[in-house]
Image 1 (cartoon, one colour):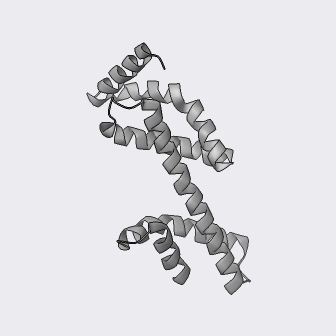
Image 2 (cartoon, one colour):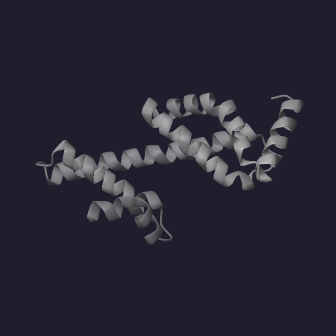
Image 3 (tube, one colour):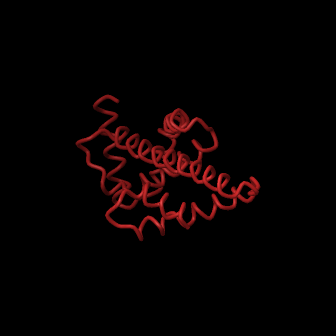
Amino acid sequence: MDHDQKKDMNALILEIKAGHTDQFEVIVKQYQQQILIYCYHMLGNIQEAEDAKQDVFIKAYEQLHKYRESISFSGWLYKIAYHHCVNKLRRRKLLHHLHTILLYEKPHHTEDHLNSIDMNFRQDETLIYYEVKGTDPFLATFFLVARG
């Protein structure tokens, strides 16, 4: 991105911060393909990448007040995408371990039953995370769910 493009992007961000929220669409259109490709390379699944792309833009919009002009906007956006995808990969690994434990302890579970557990787990994960303070949320969540 050259100097003029960076100035234009910073001006656009200032407009959005000033209340012209409809202008965020310009950012989405400019970066959606690159963020999709990036998420796909990290996650290896196009549907998950599509979902991640949407989540990244929602997070970027919600956190736009934290963006500082001294850093590259695209770098800031990619950082959000990176952390989002890493968290999705951690959850995926955790769910795989949970499946393994449930299949080992209760081999009569059907795939439908395991999928319903995944959904309940995802919905309860945030609650569990906030109840456990001072520990790694990934390990704490796994510990509580695996014991539960």
